[in-house]
Amino acid sequence: MTSNGRRQILSIYIPGDIPDLQSLHLNVLDHDLITLTECTLGFISHVFLREITRRRPNVTEIFWRDTLIDAAMFRDWIVNVGQRPAPSRLAHIVVELRERLKVIGQVQGAWFEMPLTQEQIGEAMGITPVHANRIVKQLRDDNVLEFHRGSVRVIDEQKLLELADFDGLYLHQRPSL
Amino acid sequence: MPRFHFYIVEDGRVITDEEGQELIERDAVRREAVETGASVARDAFMQGSASQGIVCEKVTSCS
Picture 1 (tube, rainbow over the protein chains, first blue to last red):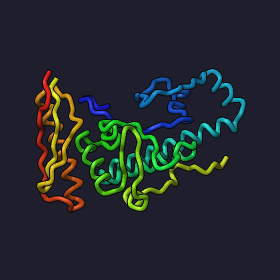
Picture 2 (picture 1 turned 120 degrees about the vertical axis):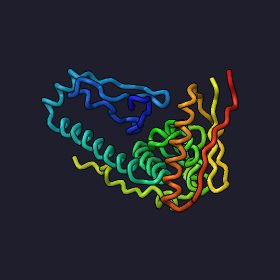
Picture 3 (picture 1 turned 30 degrees about the vertical axis):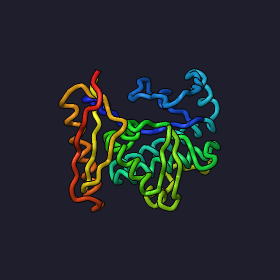
């Protein structure tokens, strides 16, 4: 959030993610976490986490790896917002979300959930809601993507991938531990 | 609160804004239009998809 009230969305978490693992070692939360939908939240006590990470190095490695992948995703997010034109930016965010949702079995059929308002889509892309509205319409008119009530449908896979300029390497989805 | 709808006109093509935004200050309305215009123009000019763009706002409701 900037001092004049502009918000930048930096990441989208999906079921199974641990969004604030950093609070284990950084005592102050330096950003906000908000829910986009009704959520079931699980809490793991810091006391327990500290104990298990000290006793079980393999668990520590997994958490460390999770944090590193988080960082890789933030790097990609910066490149996306800083360098791609707006239609590509949105396509990239959609493809990333879909690749992650696939892993947890949340992409079935043509539609998948992307419960962001037009304003939030703008905040994820670093543009105004009005510009976001224009991009959403353009992608629909160009037969790439269709947004409807918090869900998205891929109309043309080929066009989407070209536009998204997506290489999923940074998601490190192949477990190496 | 007045609800403002920002219409984008690119090379004569009108893109409507059904959702609109509630804004109080006149300055905020202007800023929204200017920032939208600048970022739309950046994209459009870089891709060569438009040579002229206008953002205009329209108030639809006051309460």
